[in-house]
Length: 392
Image (cartoon, rainbow, N blue to C red; front, side):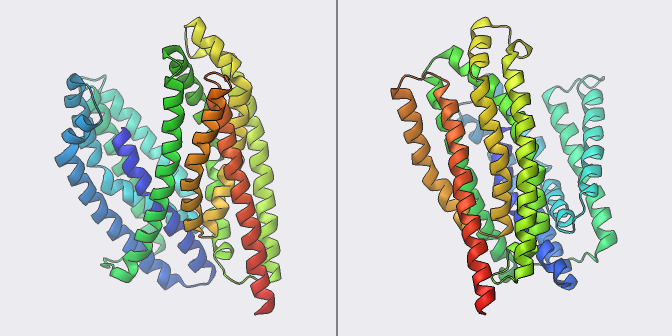
């Protein structure tokens, strides 16, 4: 799963680039360019998915061994990875088609696809895992793969009804934007993952109980962290047409600012709700563990976990603003620079004897810093691009 999820992080360029371009081109009425973009993205996505899937199938065992997987787990893990790898072409179809829908302000279709895929996955699990085949982990992988292909088929059917899909082989001019976006997003995502790994390593130095407590806390944190993702997608869908402009009129600037304020306010409220939820869940750790020592540590960290979630929610929508402005290089550069900064914060917390929950102080600081950086950049871009429009 870790290998598969890492591959998906690289493929996020298809979502970010396609969504932004579809939004921008559609607002200008350049529908022929939208048709070509989506057709190119689908062909490129399927080809990339097949290529990477083949690599995972051929090199799955060596990759698992390189990750220090226990010998007795390599066989089932390899089986799971190879079956999931088969789904990659369909995953790319879903990514591109979903980005097209969001770029056209259509959030209903991705919701219906998610429902159809979830039902397929659940039914597949019931039959293949608990039914007569008794396939175990392989059955889970087969069910998930089947659900992805169901989603891809639904997406293609929906998209083909809206635009004339054609088999258009992309040239270098068409491929280059995806590669550029991919490289920047990969650098950004890898840097962020390094931060999470660093936090986990610091927690590990405090012992087994601290590590287990951190795993409980991070699981609760992820519940709240994902809640703001729709607002980030909304920013990319609705603001990319104006955000990507190098010159904005006063009316466009005002619309951009009002929309940003509305999204920030909404996300702030969402973050507050997630603060209450996650802090509340951490305060009742018996829901997640029966170990009293772990429960005590998680309960003690409840307030700072809740604050970290709140900050992460607001930061999430600020990331959406950066993507809407198509400022991918800035996002990658700051993500790299934030790594040594977080390591410094974690080291200071450790030296001051705050214990394992100093990592959660670092988590809160990590999102606060990113939010401040994104806010400063968005304010700068808004001022700079409005100034150009005035003097043009």
